Length: 226
Ligand code: URA
Ligand code: SF4
Image: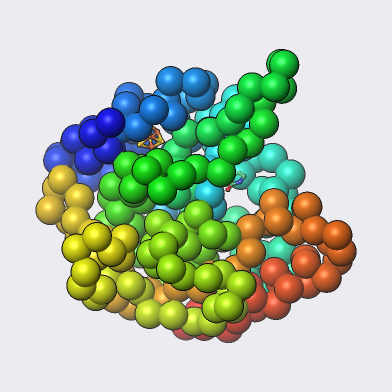
């Protein structure tokens, strides 16, 4: 599979134009079984951008990110942390739902590195058109897309990190990302903060503790807003 790059129109100036083009993406195998591409949505001038893993079952059906239980929990946690959930932009590292069929049930499967790499040009193209002050990275898949394969959310969650545009190594996920329009996903003023995925809170043995941990991390992000 070719990756998403060749599906990104060089003349696309806006998120809406990217979203329209992404509807036809065949950059990896995932478009075959999923219902539709689920692109980012929300306030394009938001100071806080959240990056999740991939759409879930409900998102796949509706065509919108974070419309299910994880999204509800995320908006509540943002609100509790002092981030206005009405002024955020939400997207995912991978834009198609990856699942395994068990009978009639569609069971979530974590995207592989090949899907993250293939889909990354969309994320890069989005960031070239957004102006966040804080990028909140939700869970390991988003962290792999933006911080490279060796980043450990469990070790570095809740830390304010620089935007990772300066890493040098060619196969590093964090090399300076440029999209087809020559736009660099460079947000030098943005900082990045990794935390656990809201779905991990929903799966946790002690949901209250996990939720409080998520809110505590998001408070660090909220305090960093100018
Ligand atoms: N989980 C994600 O990572 N993204 C969504 O859009 C929904 C659930
Ligand atoms: Fe394209 Fe990403 Fe969907 Fe793969 S997951 S087909 S790269 S939009």
